[in-house]
Image (cartoon, rainbow, N blue to C red; front, top):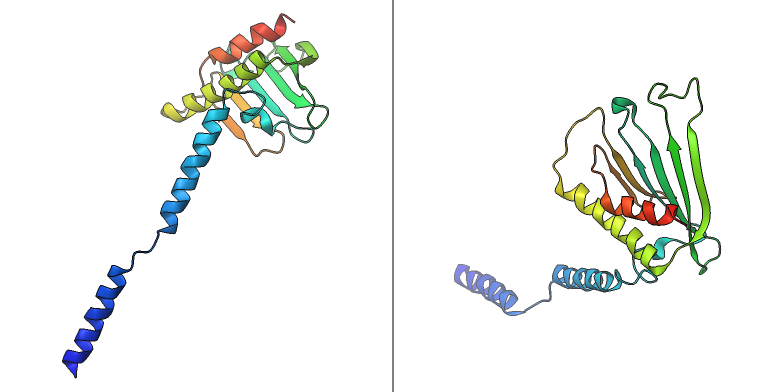
Length: 186
């Protein structure tokens, strides 16, 4: 009786090993790879790439706070990227807040504010915005975290907080500076 039971158990184990099942985890990994490859192919097209997130209900904020006043911060530059209509043109507002380091909390004097609003973005500028986001993500993921009480702070934030990238202390963000030069010339 023990021999028959042992033969049945071994037979069942061997039969299970012979049946090849597809691993759902491998299929999911394949789908993820295909999705990532699709996204990467579309990154170069600003009309179908990562900026598709922008619509009438969603906007992006790209922001940099400087360090000219040390631990009190510095000037702040920001871009608000948005659409007025669902599939309409992508627009940008630019704002720069210049603070006085002798009065960093603006108790005596209001900070100087420079604003430019409602500029339509070209494909080149949209690509540069996409490059800004990618550059910040790459920096954030490739630099070892460090503790600091002063420095540059860089941000990319979606209005609904579905995308939040905060890097502090950060770097000078060259693509952001390039975008700033182009937009402020308009």
